[in-house]
Amino acid sequence: MKASIKKTIYGGILILIFLLLSFFGCGEKSHETWLNKGVALYDLDQLDEALEAFNKAIEIKPDYTFAWYNLACLYSLKKEKYKALKYLRKAIENGYKNLSHIRKDKDLDFIRNEKEFKEIIDKL
Image (cartoon, rainbow, N blue to C red):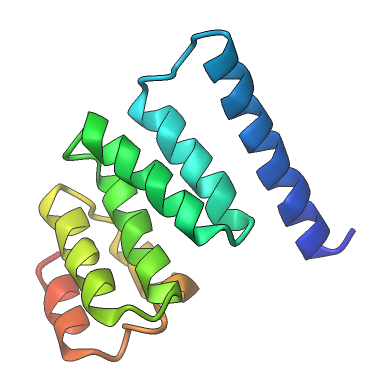
């Protein structure tokens, strides 16, 4: 099966799970549920909708490192350098520590050669 088809199926399944949980009143206020919805939308290249979901996760849990990190990746993909760097810094300030993932994450390629990117990851 092609990777793009797998990606679409995976994203669709995650969105379906989110909708079912919301319908039955489970997890509707969970920061993790909003993150999962955001990741599914992100995987489907629905970046504006993913942005809303990640922001909801942060509203519920302001120190949620994974939501901040995903915002950094999202803005890097959108080629919004300053926001991507801002949110990467925020993820690290809130405890994100996976340096090996940051170094290989292709979603951050747009900002990887920036001086500020190197300064941010040097703090890990």
